[in-house]
Amino acid sequence: MNYEEQDFQTEKVNLKTWKKIIETVFKSKKNVFLMVMFVVILSLLDAVTPLLNRYAIDVFFREKEFSTLVPFVILNFLVALGFGLSVWGFIYQAGKIEVAVNYELRKQSFETLQRLPFAYFDKTPQGWIMARMTSDSRKLANVISWGVVDLLWSFVVMVTILIVMFVLEWRLALIVTTAIPVMALVAWYFRKRILVHYREARKINSQVTASYNESFMGAKTTKSLAIEAENYDEFNAKTGLLRRANVKAVFFQSIFSPIMLLISYIVIAFVSVQGGNEVLKLAISVGTLYAFIEYSVRFFEPIMQISRILAQFQQAQASAERVIQLIETKPEITDSPEVVEKYGDLLNPKYDQWEPIEGDVEFKDVTFHYLENEIILQNFNLKVKKGTSVALVGHTGSGKTTIINLLSRFYEPKQGEILIDGVNYKERSMHWLHKRLGYVLQTPHLFSGTIMGNIRYGRLDATDEQVIEAAKAIGADEFISQMDKGYLSEVGEGGNKLSTGQKQLISFARAILADPRLLILDEATSSIDSESEQIIQKATDQLLKGRTSFIVAHRLSTIVKSDLIVYLSGGKIIEQGDHRTLLEKRGAYFELYKRQFLTEQQEKMEKAL
Image (cartoon, rainbow, N blue to C red; front, side, top):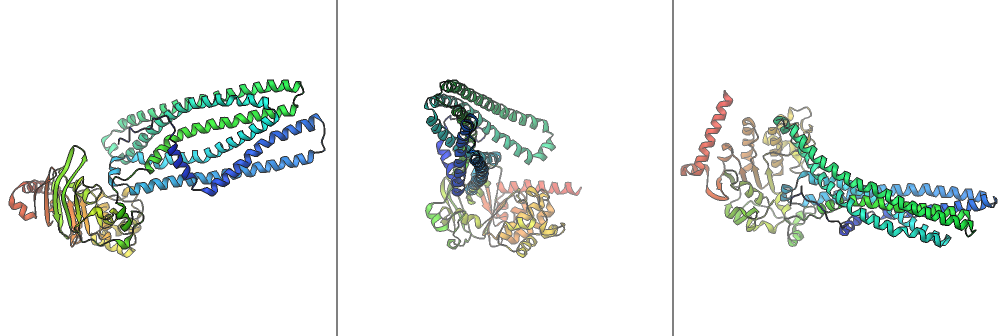
């Protein structure tokens, strides 16, 4: 799926989407009930005030009768007090609903992201996800909470006023009701156009958010390549498209309200003329005409509100579609119902049902492809006994990373099976595997926080002493102790306060703390200087003892000590054996070793000079 080009250009409002949003709103049932109560009270008070004014005109001004003035003043005071309390009530409850909806949408989105496999994040731009989690969910929560308030108020006011108008003078009320179908037709026409342009704007906004993210993440690269101007031009072009899409939507929205206002005042003019004639004929009183004109104005005000709310809902439709799409995204890789029943799922694991892992691994007739016509592995077989360290070597595209991804169950074989301790790993939960798997990446990611907290991610229940012990085992304690706050030092966003070597040392300490039975080192020493590598190599030798490990590396020092070296080409095993055996064969591995040995020696000589 191409997320940058994905849009929702259908003109119909998706009722299924809004049904799910409303279900989210009604999770706060108490707040919704109180909000409805306050809105209904406010609507009824809105309908009462013209009747009070009618009474004042007909009794106090026309008949000059003031015996009921004190009760009238008291009643007006109570109405004003009712207005104040009801306005406070619905604002407070609507605010609570807005917060609750925003929280619920983000919580559901984040929970979905936790369940999605590695493949999803491989294919989905970060900016697309960030836009769903931030601007879309915030906009949707705002429109839902306050839109429901205004919509409910408008509906109750319209119904109440319409009933009162027909009671006062049904002929004048008929004139007012003739405007309703005309306004509905105008609203339908503009709804379609506003919705299309706001959907387009939301799609482009995702691209702009992605550009923001790439700009921040690649700031150093941009500066080093001196491509600021090119980046600015590209970003300016995207924001220009966003501006034009928004301007088109705003244009239709801006003429929508005036047209509705024009229709309403034409109808009010007809009511005034007809009502004036009725007063001259003494068919109705001046107070009644005043009340009727005020009701007419108040009747069309909710219609204007509804038109505004519809425009807001049309804008939010695009956000709703995208947020719900994220929440409803189904993982491509899932555990079977039987596995979930036994082992639990990611967020509700049943640890007491988890078997220990020994570490035997077997790839059995495994076939895999990312794209349908590009086979990466075909009928691949590899058997590894527990406690064996396996080095995967070969040129780029040979299938090393694919084997690691399949073993980690970030992807699953298209054909064949992968056995762990003689059991197909699909018969156990993904969480069971990942909890027993240590994975050290080429570019380690550190979370904002302290060094202590980052190492503890390896085992969240570890004590401070265990964290420090893991750091000492890997050789990270030396540089940590030299920092101002030691283990309580902040690493910065993404670990930007530490060098690449220091970040890698912390990721190794994290892996040691986790004490995994299966260990994967994916180019884990490629970003580390020779001095740091020597420190890590000593600790790694100790770490690998008794554990099954898969190592993807180019440095000879990481490869030569492995129990089994597998040379891959085109997804097939060309050679396998230990270092000495493969050198004696003088085959593909021998040539690779010879080239890399000469390259490393040359690098050492250049550094010495």
